[in-house]
Length: 213
Image (cartoon, rainbow, N blue to C red; front, side):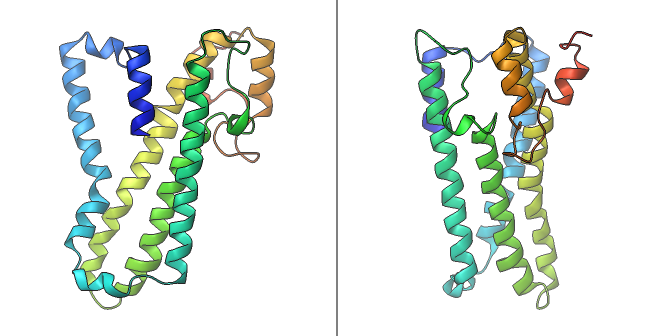
């Protein structure tokens, strides 16, 4: 993902999501503080992992842990493929398509975020099965490790409801709402969850008056 973001930055030279924020000192300051808090929350699992007795990890590998590791790697691979497909599409100088609707993007409007969310939930499953269930009966201090859950939960809430997906959906609608192919793609393709997820414009697009009545 880091490589994808770096390549995108050097090609676009800007990020439309931060253009308005960068022009205001107070908005930029608040955004920087918010980013710092978010980084700390996301780092909570690592902080707790470093606080665990090293002897705990001697016998940590088991069948269910191996399953979680395999699934986590699978989600990471899916996210990488989705980002690579989007990057190749964005770098094309002449587009015969106005939006990407092939590959992993055929059945999901945001397969990269779907994979990342899935990766985080694999970490939650690993925590519940390996750390919490094994130790809660022996040491009440492990209850504090429930704070571990703040990391994936906050990430998912922010990504799906506040930033990232809502911003991308609104921007896409502004550019392509007159395009019939895009309208069809919007109606037939789930926003995040393939096949079973919500289809059509998201709530923020509707509430922002981008859909004219």
